[in-house]
Length: 84
Image 1 (spheres, helix red, strand yellow):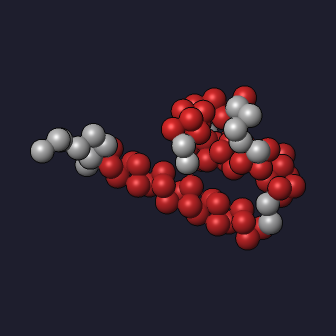
Image 2 (spheres, one colour):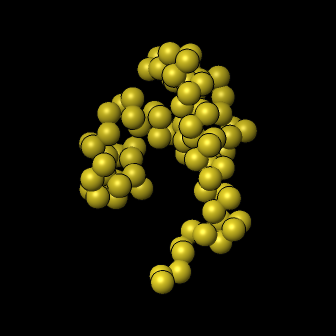
């Protein structure tokens, strides 16, 4: 992953650097992190148009895992470690 791609994540929906499949996965991650209770049947239909059921489960599990890691780092104040 290049620095250009990392910077493009902030506006992934409008970026030509991501495929439609990648944009959908990023949208899933964003929805899981910010509005998980608002994910509806229409969104899951869109997911199923690009991903198999097993891929959706795997993607959801990885998203959940990284959301959890991020929250743990924040709670433990480890997001910006001190420079020794």
